[in-house]
Figure 1 (cartoon, rainbow, N blue to C red):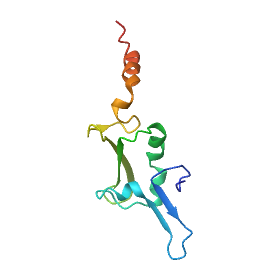
Figure 2: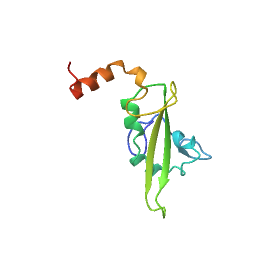
Figure 3: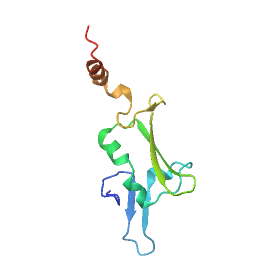
Figure 4: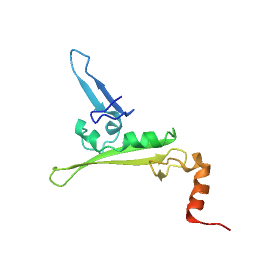
Amino acid sequence: MQTPAGRECPHYYADFNRHTRDVEECRLAKTNPDSEPWHPKDCLKCPVPDIVLANASRDTYLVLTIRTSLFGISRRVEVEAICLKTGEKVDPYIGCPDEHPGLEIFRQALDGDDD
């Protein structure tokens, strides 16, 4: 679904067709009790749509946390990724390392480890 920022995000949900109540939410932010409440303006700074485009791994679990500054003036959107296979934190844009066997070969080529 398209976010208020104009990008596609599978975790954003909106329903404005009901007569009783409009619903607009980030379902990823709802899963983290340590996060501040979500506001539609948070979509402007959110990296999740870019992460979803870069990493289609089903074994990567995203944790979104919204934090405010000391006096609540500014808001930050932070995303961590956890590999469900290993339970370790991974780069959200790459995902679980087992799913990219060519990634290590590519890194070695960049480092210039020619023997």
